[in-house]
Image 1 (cartoon, rainbow, N blue to C red):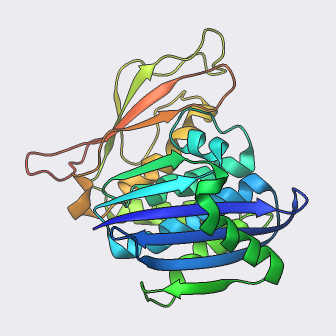
Image 2 (image 1 turned 90 degrees about the horizontal axis):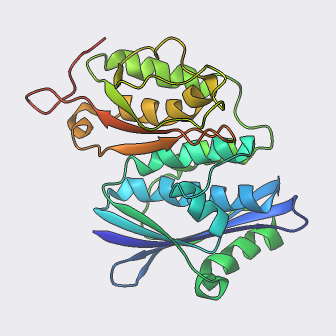
Length: 272
């Protein structure tokens, strides 16, 4: 099953009263889900990310073979696809949430389109801002809507309580101690731009800890994707593709390739 998803977010005042619009269509073009979400006081960029998060949370329930996402936010599209770095701390938090959700989708693409081509999602975002409440227009997916709880927390101005997400993730990793991720440096940091003096040039395997001396900025960039891979269901672990992560420290430009460590039977194997 393939799906097409249109997302849009906006704020009146930037920051100001904000809304997110999500429209999900079947391959035939039939609408499956259309909703408007009121986000309170937010910026335009935060609203755009929340629209994408809400859409992905709804889509993963369907376990589609592929999804194509359309957005008129060039900044968000380029950040999620890796062309731009995420420098804003608030957006970095939302960017990490998007990464975790995309790992649950077999195949995906995110494309920038003109605003005129995104009319339905724009209409839904404005509906949320006008009514100042959530409105579900079409829902052929069903469910109790519980998947929206994480995005609700992200929509709050101050974000989730410090450490809460990390505690949950670490607990899940401990239950799957046989899974590990190999990290390979594919592009070295810019000269003199790593406060730790550099990063390991040889590939290293992460299971429970990061290597000593790793720059805190590189660790911050790596952790969301590392935890997402390590937390993956064992039956899906072997199917995770190699992912690229970039350090967000200005001037660094370091890139890492992350791949699950496979055993002979296709599942993760324990390595220190």
